[in-house]
Length: 246
Image 1 (cartoon, helix red, strand yellow):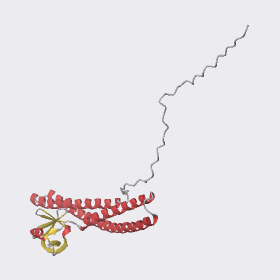
Image 2: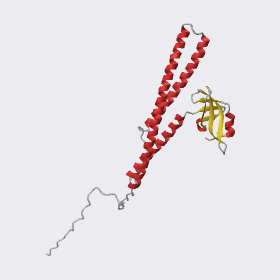
Image 3: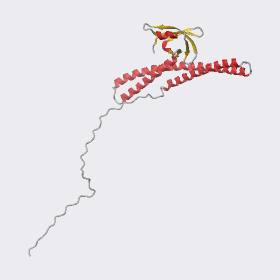
Image 4: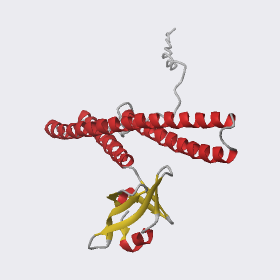
């Protein structure tokens, strides 16, 4: 969905959060083309740094702007394209098997699609490797947050932290843990779905071979009289009379 400059300028100065509710910063600039369609969004981060991203990576709804991570977009594209390419390969094999496609055409098409599948699998592997690295960093972050939360609980139990300070600090850490766990679970599910494409048989409707319908043999008309179960009666033999003269 394209973003018009007329709509986009309403978000200048508005805060930006990521898909998991983390505060990122605020929108400070928009780049539009001659059609007044926004192509780039400039974001000022909370630490004072700046970065820009394509407008499709920011979702604008109501008064909120949400940043969408590139790995989400890439994973969706790779999954759809790879699934389609593998289903087409299956359909191609089915059509060739029943004689709907000549062998030379089949060989050309199969070579093209196998090349496309190979490239998509390479893209998938690169993406999966990056996602696994991200999972590793999230695990470290979870471990770090859990360590500090345990330390806070211990200090509060021993009376070194007052209730108000403890509640505020622990609430922030627990919220961070929830967001981190949520992102980790999403990434793990995406990785599983991407790898499952090799295990899931493509859903294709195999065409049925076209054979001429057999002709129904013509049956001779049946007699209306029911067949008799008894053998036909033999005709009476002729009765011969001999006359003698006296």
